[in-house]
Amino acid sequence: MESNEFTDIKYIRDSKVSCSGNHWSAHPLIYLDLSSEEIVSCPYCGQRFKRK
Ligand SMILES: [Zn+2]
Image (cartoon, rainbow, N blue to C red):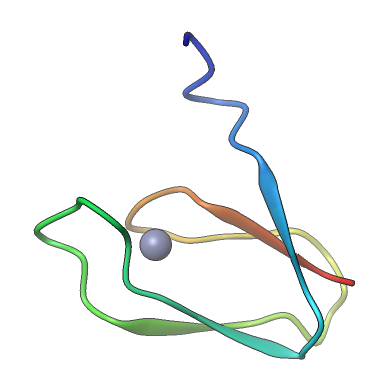
């Protein structure tokens, strides 16, 4: 709806996660480091990830 800033967090059971976006044409496949156990935002699509 109107929640651009409040993207749902995806919980990952790994210290690394790949993100390639879903419908974002300018989104390369990247890997984000979750080893800090803090919320990490993808710089391309803003998807937030956190280690489970
Ligand atoms: Zn992304």
